[in-house]
Length: 194
Ligand code: GAR
Image (cartoon, rainbow, N blue to C red):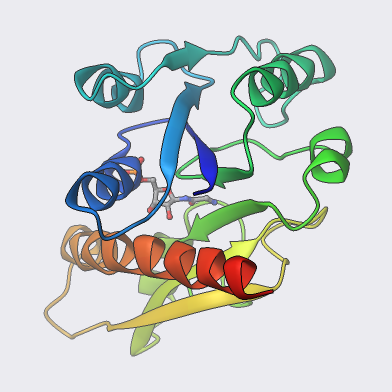
């Protein structure tokens, strides 16, 4: 069974969906630890509530990148917990090459758009303001680019005339919470059958 680490910066609703799937037996994985670059992030509270080791990694002063020291700290934790896959769930930093080289095709991200449309920050708002009639979420491998890695799975949602940004993001989260466990199951089964 793969051992996974979840990295997130905020609310952690996607992490919660993965915890729930593991606890329900619909995702065969062990969540070995949850890591955040934000000390009081709700994702860490969720980890503690489920008795999953929770770690804060200090990334200051760089706002967007996982700096060398912080990256080394993450790598140390990955070794300590014998991690097979790093799962980014609302982790708002760019992962650098050391981590990518140590975990080739083993770092996965979820992004709130149908990539390659709307990469980067605020993808939900970008889609909402574009007048598109649909958007969705993408689970993909992380590579050195910005949301450019190979796609594992996408789920579409409609953007209705009555939608507000808030209602659209609610639909987005519902889609993401289905998509992430589904994509990881696909991935882990592929691995088993390789
Ligand atoms: C999710 O919508 C995720 O797709 C997005 O952050 C949100 C985190 O929510 N990630 C990105 O935008 C990455 N570029 P959560 O903390 O409730 O899981």
